[in-house]
Length: 482
Length: 94
Ligand SMILES: [Zn+2]
Image (tube, rainbow over all chains, first blue to last red; front, side):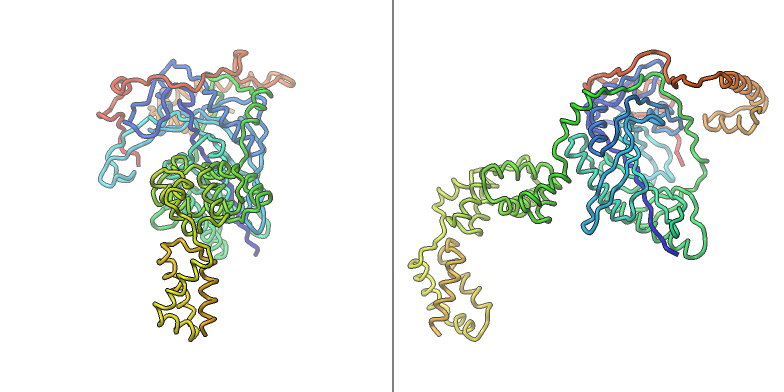
């Protein structure tokens, strides 16, 4: 028996418009429960929802970025079901004529590329939030629930993929790529932990090319839990099939703590959503001019950017991934690049030293006090051998803390590395004289001793000795002594 | 094909409504009439007629993405059958 894992994803992205999908209530995160609700998003009788143009624009841009065809005409439907977090008892969504269909997206798995088909990208509204009050704070055993409708009506883009994904790793890479695209488009902050990016999956195992039974997995709240849940489910289904049994079609929840998926007691029968066209919302017919304008607004997307960094700027993959993975960091890098320094050297500094400082202090790169041009000038001083790499690190730290320009710190501090032969020879000879033990260690073949002696040289010059020059002179003098 | 009692029960359940047997029988008759009407409509020749979702010839009605004041919270929960200080309360779900 030949097994193959088959996965399709259904992803919801909360769009970061200022106002809700069909009313003017603010979409701001947090705040007092039910402080952002109005008759429209509360579903009072007789109200008239009106489509938020900004949400349509965001969804069209996302659809275009995923190579989808924008429908010349699409409509909204009411999806009817009863749940306390749904004030209207229906969710406004799109059904048989969605905003866009038939796209694709290639993911780079290192060894190979995988093309993932996109069934559709459509618009809908979010539900409210139930806060379960009871001893456990969780849904089971709750005495009652509080309903907060601040989230009800926030625009969502739903992305449905074809079952083209073949492993949990591919699922995670796809989701990561999609997240990056949405962030680059500026349409969502895509934080899984805050629920602005949510992912459900369908997973089945085909046996000798024959389609398997699909199981739906819910409640995966991080990239890690997506991988864990799908890996667990992959193993579970293979186990069932190996034992000669059949996989049951069902919905399973991922339990973060146990790392397992559990069948949801299917007390409620299969949902019967009784979709019908939303009579209060007229069709969307985006014209060519509008979609072309939106297409023109799409910035260079992460995948293209990564390719350009690697082929045109010759950045190693590790560096380009770090830079591209954070749109703001990539922008910082590109601004620094205009100063004409070596891209690889610059890439190393931005993705290495600078990023380490930013993370250490939890400062977003947008608020970094070292200007991109300042960092470029610092690197210029290193490449011209005015200061050493070690000195540059210290200067960067100081500039980072004080906000002073790096080149000013170098100038004011009289920082320059000593590469003058005579001066270094003097220092090296002093060090040799003062450390006879280390010298004899070196002569008996202990390489460590050289490092120790170099440390002394650095100390004597207060870190200003050119490391290359000092090492050369030190080795030379030691060998001549023999 | 007439509607079955089970269908009426199913629809009632989806709508979270409870009926007596007598009411169900009445509803069954009424739903039968609705379905009968649908059957009449179904018999119309619609070849070449584009599907219609809306009765008015209007498309692309948008509002700009601008915030407007929401209701005061007291107003929001005023009509709720059960509410606390923070908002709507509902019986435990599962
Ligand atoms: Zn509202």
